[in-house]
Image (cartoon, rainbow, N blue to C red; front, side, top):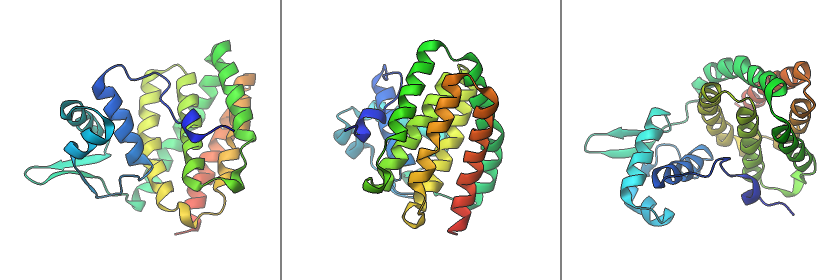
Length: 223
């Protein structure tokens, strides 16, 4: 059986201690394992991650530029709030860029990358969603999106979309307990990954757009 840990990884192993700290803290923030507005104790994080305080502090500075943490003089560092009013703006950007990156991936991804995506599509399609926790399902969602962004081969587009996707994921996770279609939402990725692997740019673009619009609709339905 494939576990969450098998897939929820960065595609390029972090090369520095600061990179390792960044990846670990970032993923805790976007999945709300570090709750919104929670104070962040860099010493406790250092101990938990088995890293020094210097790389953790470097990681937190980077995360601040991505609006995942905020620092206040003499008060410390905190996870940022999840503001539902950001949903419209975040989805407006993603509705344009997600289909663009999907189309580009279908056109430019090399054969080996397409093979990876096809394999991932099979794993997503075979997920036994009713037996899985919603956070675990969201980890698969994260893995799929990161895979597609990487396949497009444009680091600037990847960085931009990753930032907005992380903001969207925090909103999504805030309402997971009230959403009934998380499994279906994740299973939709199989069609997207297959379209990219097949080089079907039109279908990849259309599936991606429908997926993003569906995400916004699903969140608004539980507000």
